[in-house]
Image (cartoon, rainbow, N blue to C red; front, side, top):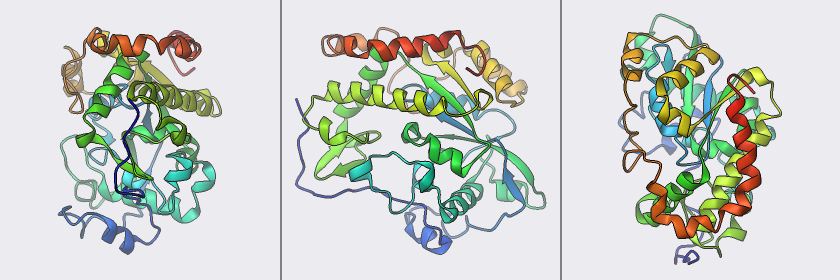
Length: 326
C-alpha cells in the first residue's frame, strides 16, 4: 500500500547550522534547559580524527555508537547530531538529505565545529566545558546520525581528518526493521514532504518512491544508503575508513570491537573490557533483542524484493574479507 498524503503541505523539519551563534541558540527548542549556556567559546579545543559511524537506518549504528561511547577518550553530543550538521538552506524537498563538499562553506564549517564542541560530554555525562575548564588540546569525537549515509563528502569537507566507520546489515533483517519503524509512523515519521509523511532519511529520488509500498520504500532506503556509502568511501584513502557487519558484531562483539578500536587508534580500559565479556546490551533504539529470524514476520513482503538487491548484497559481502581498512 503506498503512502497516504496528509492535509499539511510543506516540510516540517528543524534545519540547524546557522553561522550566527546567537541565532543558532535561539533556534533550538525552548525545552533544552542548557540552551543559554552551551555556546561558550572553546577556541583551545580541537577535534582530532573525529569518528563518524555511517550505515543505513536500523543497521546497528546505535548499538555500535553506544558501545564505542564507552571508550575512555571518546566524547559525544549524547546522541545524534542531525540538527547541528544541517545548513539552514538545505533543500530537502529537491535534494533529499544529500550534502556535498560544496555545502560546507566557511561559515558552516566554523559553526558546526563550534556547536559540537559546546555540546560534548564523556561517557559519564560530564560536559567537556566543565571537565577541561583549564585545559585545551585535541579530543576524539564519536558521532552517529543515519542521514550521514548521504553526507560523507560534506563531513569530510568540514572535518578533513575524519575517520568513517561503516556498519552494514543483511537486507532481510535491516528491511524488516525499517518496515516496523514505518508502520509505527505516528511515532517515528520525521518530515512532511509536500504533504507526504516520511520516515528515516530522505533519498534524492523520494518522489519516485511515494507511490510504492512501504516494503519497497524500505528496500530502496537500504540500497540507497549502502550504495552512497560505498561509492563515497571509495573516494577517500583506505586508512580513513573501516567496516563491520552487524551480524558479525552480534556474534563476536569482543573481537569486533577490539579490532575496530585498534584501527581507530582508540584506547580501551577495564570498564569497556567488562562490557565486552558478554553479549552487548540491547540498544536504546531497539524495540526488541536481536534475533536472526525476526525478519520472518515480513518474509512474504521481503523475499520478492531480494533479487533486485543481489548485486549490492554481493558488493557488501566482499567487505567481509576486509579485516582492516579496505
